[in-house]
Amino acid sequence: MTSQQEFRRYLTNVDTTSTHQLFTDCLIIGAGIAGLRAAIEAAEHQNIIVVCKDSLQNSNTWNAQGGIASVLNNTDSFESHISDTLKTGCGLSDESVVDLVIRQGPELIEQLLNWGTEFDMVDGKIAITLEGGHSHPRVAHAHGDETGRIIAEALIRKVRENPNIKIIENFYTTDLLTNDNNKCMGVIGCDNHGPQIIWAINTILATGGAGRLYRETTNPAVATGDGLAMAYRAGAVLRDLEFIQFHPTTLYIAGASRALITEALRGEGAILLDNQGVAFMKDYHKAAELAPRDIVSRAILAQMLKTESTHVHLDVRHFKKELFSKRFPLISELCESFDIDIAKDLIPVRPSAHYMIGGVKTDTSAKTSVENLYACGEVASTGLHGANRLGSNSLLEGLVFGKTAGQCAIQDTKGAAAHIQHSKIKYQIAHSNRTRLDASDVRNSLRALMWRNVGITRKAQPLIEAQEIIRFWQRYVMDKTFESPQGWECQNMLTVALLMAQSAEKRHESRGVHYRGDFSKKDDKHFKNHIEIAHGK
Image (cartoon, rainbow, N blue to C red; front, side, top):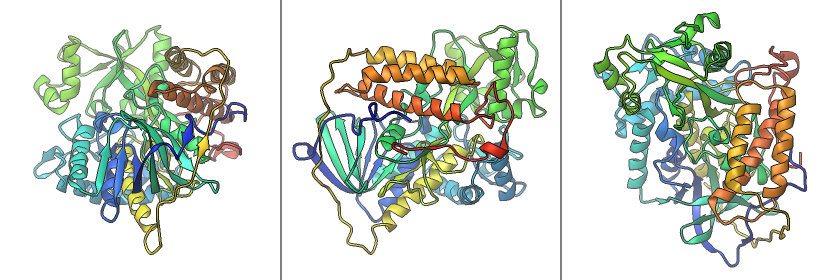
């Protein structure tokens, strides 16, 4: 973990006596599926403020294509879904958490339907499809490949209808505020009017993932690991940061940002071909294109090296074009924008950073190790995913633990004389005479470093080198006071990147999405456990 010299409790100067202040029963940071679902639940009995660093529409949830996994017909079973999740988790999933989440799926999806989510239907029932790692079709989708957006729109409508919920967009949360007993009391942040403090009885962290730490990623620009960094500074335990999932198939067009090509394509028959037109997946796994994501990602990387290519291809030429356009409208439009005719052209793809499996450690009540602080969604480490996430389980987890966090935030204030605690906090950052590095340049260099040294395959020396380079940047960035989100994001990215590299170096084995070229086997004797990290411990 970072040294005491590098550690700073707050990113900005804090003076609670001279900063504009708001008060609420429950504060929710983040507006993806977990944050919105938490707000809906908690607002039944409390006043809620939801803040997000951009618009409500800018989240990983909004961009999710494939769907949400649940047992939705009689040919499937909870036991099967549980078994698939545990198998994919490679021995690190918490069985009680898996059982808890899977069994709530049908009810919560039915609730989404009642709230106006326009799931695709067949004969009056929610349509389901198959994805890699699943033994049965159980992935519900909406408007073809726009599932995340359709779910988010329904939740946003529900939130906007509730008079107990106040929404503040374009609010950058810089830090969690804690008192001398390390209780979370709210946050300090910044909106268009300047610095603000929001005091809250309970705070729910739902800030999403950290995919933007990598040069190649499916994540939107907001996914810079802010929640992980602020929780670390507040003393929370973080867990499993070495486990970040790489999506096997993102559109590869040189010069263009990466765009997700949903796994559902392979679930419905798309074939991976190398640059010589060879279908290669059966050489790597018996399930071929339907193997778990980590296996497909490594197979693609290996085949790229073998054929000295920058990418491979998805072959969907056997799909009927009009049906493809209806089932996958986003991908169809994306391909057309790059003059790719799916009826005769192959789709160029390569892996990209996609989902942060590790996060802030929580229990089954969504509580973190910091009192009055909860976490849910991608920022949390609940124990569901283990060392690898089963496709389309993430939206389900967000629903379940969003609801749980909202419920528990209410219960923790029931029957007690709960009131918003606030105290005088004054934190002044010492002036630094060190040279200021350009935050934008550091960010770009960091993302390239993470892709190169802490990527799909890892080895000891590159991981050590990554830590040395990140520490060097930290000396010239972490001691500075920034006045804009770009600088704060850079500081957060450096904080989280170092913790990820440290965790990856410590795990001397290959398990799930964490693959070590120098320790290529799974080692249950020494590493069938979690790597936890917290400041000062």
